Image (tube, rainbow, N blue to C red; front, top):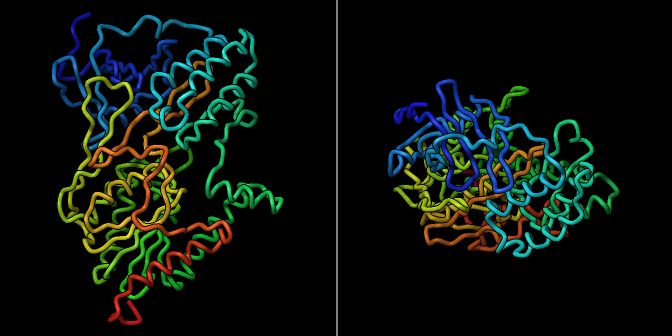
Length: 447
């Protein structure tokens, strides 16, 4: 066939890191996943792939190109191939042993944190290969994979069965820290762990609204944002997630643009109200993650000048320099006074990225306990039998080059927000004590 158009990027591209083969044609995009153990197609539609790879930027040569979701987002570097490898489009029935090899190769080639989490993991997995027989049933193989993954203790590692088996084949990571204390509480109360977690979360929100904000707070953006004044001239902003601000329609996930469009007016209103505050408490102690882009948009409301926030790079991305993310001052309502960002071991993923970015600002103090230590985007890898594995393949580092994966970001000012002896009320009390400590002596009794 004739050479693809350089302008349109038509052709086949292999990513550096990530294990992707991207085919670009006038009809749309196709994606395959490649390891040393095989090649499998991705079930995503062209429209879904465009959301991730819809923008192209030239690389250092004509046969190198960067694909990304949009300006400022994570860029993925690809090299042009002459054609898609033949094995990628050849029908194949995968045996249990071949499935094991694909699973093993996926982690060997892409997982970023073996040294920090479990340096002997691959060797122990290899020792399990002799247990795999060609006709091994799915339940036994799934159990073998799940048992291996638990030792990583990584919030960004998941194993999902196909839809037909999802009710019977499940993987749950081992609970630690606050979640382990909640599980122990559920055992003591003889109640389901998820039910106890939901009740704990309701108590957390209610205590913020009624105790901390004295019934005068705001609970908005699909109930993911709480804000108000915690003490005279001490403002309070709590983000429970870095997404989910739009109530999604069934079968449709809101786009990043829709999420930002829902969040930005909420931040406008809150930060306008905070204009006379002496300090802001930004609480992400119960933040479950979401979009890095949302984290950066929030952080930009608190900087007065451009600041190098963090950099990231992927395992196996040869000759690709780390991508630097810089915070730019926002033109929307902002706050440049003292900010106290509060975290805990529940703070994870994009909640940690927000904390990492904020720590680069001179007006921010990090308060609380260490974050979870799971920064990387989740690399989604479909397995040949319809299962899906998620893993963390990226490294995040602060402006000084420090990587906090697995150990979490340590606070500059310790504050125990989820005490084991009082899991239900310790958070509101800890934030109340922090807020009271920030009240200036001359402040009035009302904000």
